[in-house]
Image: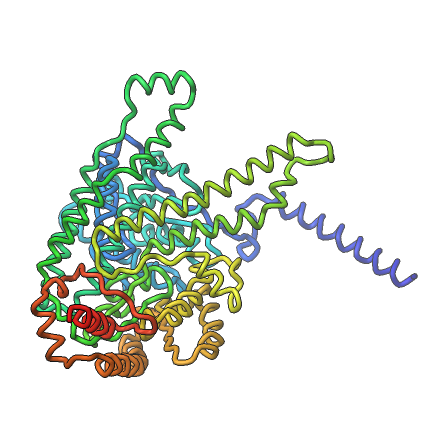
Amino acid sequence: MIWVLLISFFKMIMMKARAAKAIEYNSVPEKEIPADLYKKHFRRPIELPFFKDERSVTNILLGGLSSTHDRLIAAALSNLGLKAKALPPTNLSAFELGREYGNNGYCNPTYFTVGNLIGYLRELEKKGLSKSEIIKKYAFLTAGCNAPCRFGLMEIEYRMALKDAGYAGFRVLVFKKEDGLNQPVRGLGIEINPTFFLAIINAINMADILTGFTNSIRPREVSQGQTEQVKEEATLILKDVLRNKKELKLNAKWSKIFDYLGIKKVAFFIYTFYDQLTNKENVLALSEIATLFSKVEMDPFRSNTIVKITGELWAGSTEGEGNFSMHNFLESEGAIILVEPVATYIQFMLHKHLLRHTDHQEMILQEKIGHWWQIVQRVENWVNYKKKLWILKVGIKLYRREFARLLKALGGNNHMIIEQNELEKLAHDYYNTHIEGGEGYMEVAKNIYYHKKHKCHMVLSLKPFGCMPSTQSDGVQAAVVEHHKNMIFLPVETSGEGKTNAHNRVLMALEDAREKAKLELNKAYSSTSYSIKELKIYVNRHPELKIPGYCCPHREGVAGKTANFIYHVDELMTTAS
């Protein structure tokens, strides 16, 4: 007991001494504080706001996804009164600039994106614009979030790198992916509202569908380069549709009535979504594009290995040196690539909101409840919980409906985005689906899904170096591969260097995948009632079978497009005879 009292007394004396020292330290003027004691806190770089009246003279730069995505998003934002422009594709020079002005420990997307932005601004200087003119007439728009990894810090790093490169004050405008349909942007020059989000979502969905469609037919085209030529025509058509979308306005009479009732904002919100669900402009545009692609001749008997690309969103979807030009490399090796649509990530974010909401059910239902007799408050809490729950559920259903009707308009064998409930169930035994960050449980779930459903021959996971969420997934994938026979899974980190090593690793895995595709194809040929020559004669007599938009049914247990096509033609010939 005595020792306890002595220790307590000693602690009390020490605490008083520290408090006195703290008071003495804080009373010293800042300039008199010794350099080894004074800590300079981080301050956000000074940045100009972006006001509404600057829209006509300010160029909003975009970059970070594929060229098709960036161009279509720019067109959609132009319809909202912004002078939006997509940055050119990034390259190794951009990576080196990013490394020069960025902190150590950035992830790949940050180095490439900020380096690309700095390189573009320097090109403007070479054309005669001064730094002050560039800062005044240009801004960069990007997405931000409260991620538990480096993504949550990217916007800060962009500003710091721009400042160090000589563009102090350059505007980096950020909209938060998780902050809802209405949120402020510095200066209010960009209104983040339902109209803004719907414009971006439409652009992303059309870019996803167009990219997936061309990826599936390019490796089997007869005339090399024809697919890319038609894709460029298609992109211009979609840009024109997005840029010239008619502005929505409430009828003057109804506008006055709604204003009088105080529900004008709610009425416009409903009208906006009604237009989204009933407007057929985007559907008709994709139907027109399907006609253009019908001119592309394909060789459906050309065997290809199907490679599913997963991993971090930017690393998987970017084109060029950002992922070692992996898309082009795989196609040069005779593979058909399945790049994950950005739409899957959007659906994932909606589903995560739903998961968080259901996790917080008890907390929401008990909010402001102090006594058992507060019946009115309990009912109000229950209504609030159910209202948000159904809004999220309906939102997910409507989003899938919009993607599906665009997919149908273009045709072909494009894959529908997978239900998040299904992915969550597949990952549950291996990965805690409540873990936040990156793609969460999706990397694990997609590997299992594409293997079990026989949608590909191998899965290639591309991610930035040291990506925390992807590193977690890779650790789990070891158990996944162990429990699923014949699964070919390869994780590859991208960093701007090590291209040769990455390509060699992919080639080794691709060789095993080719063997799977070859065995599958040989089995298909041996199962048919007709020779290869007879099959080809039949297809030549029915040219509609060679149109890119032709939907060939997927056979259970068969991943390859050629093998599926052979089974299908065999059935058609048997039925016809």
